[in-house]
Image (cartoon, rainbow over the protein chains, first blue to last red):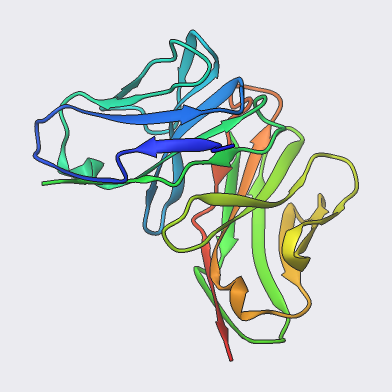
Amino acid sequence: IAGITQAPTSQILAAGRRMTLRCTQDMRHNAMYWYRQDLGLGLRLIHYSNTAGTTGKGEVPDGYSVSRANTDDFPLTLASAVPSQTSVYFCASSAELATDTQYFGPGTRLTVL
Amino acid sequence: AQSVTQLGSHVSVSEGALVLLRCNYSSSVPPYLFWYVQYPNQGLQLLLKYTSAATLVKGINGFEAEFKKSETSFHLTKPSAHMSDAAEYFCAVSVTGGTSYGKLTFGQGTILTVHP
């Protein structure tokens, strides 16, 4: 069982370009999440989805969009990347919201120049 | 809204010494509390979680944490540090009510260094 996979592992991107970070889970979890990790700030929630077909905004949603067309996939899109979006991005999933353990992917390191 | 404060961004201990990583939370409704560990260049892994059952929670690798409502704390401890414990540790809170339902809020992290 792979758990959660993320792609790409790392990416250098020019400002203004569009970028989609991919996330796939094989645990049939209902809930999925996107976080960004920045030094000294811990992890901050960008967007979440509590089930296929629904999404919600987290703490820092501006500049990002998500979709949840099916249970397994939860892509994160940066429509027009800016340098402040340089970060490490983690996708996670859990069986249900709130009470269940969140399982994390290995992360995508994104640099916007 | 809930919040988490981890006291000390860096903690250094000797191998075999007690590990104590501090976490205080703020929540207007009963919280669920988690400790996660992150090894270099990896994602986060769950160490333990409190979900309103026993206040003393035992996790993996010999770690445990005690939920103290009166102190709004959920400190992580391990009696004897091992070199392999060197990592970054995150405390997190989730709630089952209100506008923040289901959202996990993380502390800023504590980097644990273990010296031989």
